[in-house]
Length: 501
Image (cartoon, rainbow, N blue to C red; front, top):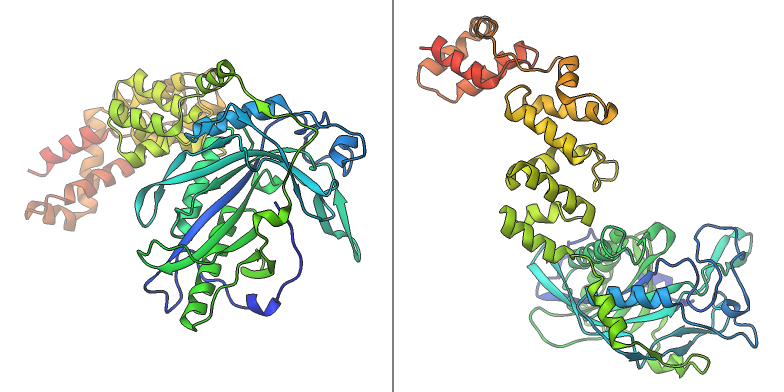
């Protein structure tokens, strides 16, 4: 990432549009968006030295001559970082090159201690590939990946720690990153957010675990390139780059603002200058910082202290083989094997663990659709993070068995599940009895509740007898309610049918 300074504050003094909406005059235009995603890799040490990569420790406590760029210090690539980068590249369908090389990317900013960043330029680790996601406007799309390369992170500047001064923490300097550069295949801010959501799910702890993808800690950061063009045109026009995007909502808001700014400028007959822009989350505005340098202005030179990175075929084959079942493949298998729809399969493949839970539940019950309903509508309600289910599969199957046997209603099961979580040693049936939710099938008790209900709702009884059959559902609900939720709905329905003759 290349920080910058300066700019024209007046150019950003407009209110940000809501994500996905266009200002008047937007008809006939479309956005062309490409994303550069910087992902910190989940390693214990930095990219080229042994300093800790741990987040949150006191400032400047994880530094050494290598990550500070002191004279005579020699960098050595982190093997685990290379391994994680290769796995990410394979998961994205990229070609991982047996030979890649490091370069020095020169720019000057206080948080870059060496005056250059060790990155990859002419010989990236991987190229090609694609990531599928669901566009809110266009349905399923494939976003092409141009390149994935390794690099080191910069330090972090703080402008609010020391009055009138900027403080710099170099703990982050040298932390390993991959940069994933997409082709300009996205057409709206909402599509950009959808792409990032899928990318984070793939790379994060739920699947590959190459990164924690925690945007609050800065381990996933986004730079976005945006231009506009007449809808349907193949041309690529002058673009701007928007930086300082550290949340998915921020990406969507910033791109909506910048798209609408460019469309408004085009409506006035003004040209677009190629510039670097910064997003202000507080105001929702995008402001220019400086004219955008071309790649050669970074003065890339081959890194003289690091030889070419050469990966053996056997090593590459082992990394490809080590990949878990990826989300797209898991979704397709669940749709074919358990007859789930595409949206249903997407819910239960949010993480590999959730997919495994659903699959185990579906196999134990022999009914994929019913298993999905339990997982999506009942069991995920127990989750603290919306993705992991704390109740063991066997216990969930036990609760379902009570419902299937008619001993507990589905509604009562939702009250029962948290109790099963709190009392792991108690049987589901005993807990249901303790809650008073065991269904009553006793004919005498049900007939009594039916008589009381019919007496309390003479108008509904008259409507039913006049041919309005749907009223029966209301009366069933009223009987179950009168029973305190313990009456078996099937027995109630049968008793009502007799009483209403």
